[in-house]
Length: 297
Image (cartoon, rainbow, N blue to C red):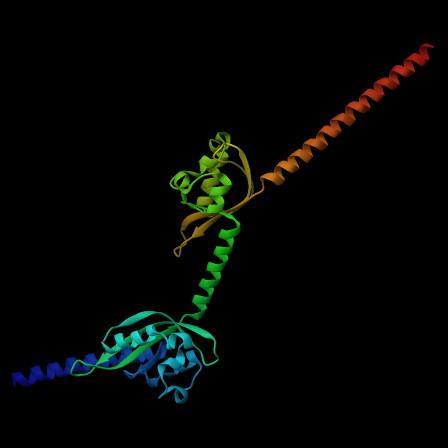
C-alpha cells in the first residue's frame, strides 16, 4: 500500500517535470528559431521561426546538410569540421555565428548547439536554439566604423564625471604634446591656464556637464610647453542604461592657426582704424591752423 503511494508520488513528480519541460519547449518554439541536426550534420527538423529567419521552407531544409546555411569558405574549413567533431563528443557550444540567408545575404545568430544524449548516455542528435541578431551586429559594426573614423581624424579624450582623464587618443596627445602616462589619471585643469582653472565659471562648467549638459565651441587651452592652443570642441556626457552619466567624451580639432589669423586680422583692422582716426585729427588740426593763418593775414 505504502509502496504504491510512493510509486504514485514519483509518477506524479515525473508528470509535473514532463509538463514543465513541455511548457519550456513550447515557449522556446514560439520565441526562438529551432533546428534539429543529425550527428553527420543533416537537418532533421526545423520550426517556423527558423524558416522565417533563414528564408527557406521546411521542405527545402529537411534532409539537407547544415553547411547549406554557412558561408562557403567556413563550410569547407578545418574549423567547421572540428566544430562538428566537438559536438559529436557532446561538447556544448554557445556564441554569435555568421550564417547565410537563402537570398545569399549574411545573417548573424546568437545560438546554442546542444548535444542530446540517449538513454545510454551517447549523443543522438544536436538541437540548436537561435535568435536573429543581424540588426544589432550591423548597427554595432556601423557604430564601430564611425568611432574609428572619428578616432583617425579628431582629437578624442574621455573624462570621469569629476574631470579626471580616463583615456586620450594619439591625435589628442600629439596636439597637446603629452604622452598617455602624463594625462591619464590627471585632471582636465592641467590643460587650462591658471586663470581659467581657478575661476568660478570653470567649476560651474564641470557641474553642468555632470548634470548632462552638452557644450560646443572654441576653447583656449595650454599644451605641455605652456603655449596657447585653440580647440574647436564638443564635450559630450555619455549616459548608461540606467540614465546615469558614465563619463564625458570630448571631440576636438586644433584651430589655433585659424584663430591666430583672425586675431591678427582683427588687430590689423583696429590698427588701420586708429591710423585713420589720427590722420583725420591731424588733418582737422591742420585745417584749423591754415584758417587761423588766413584770418590773421
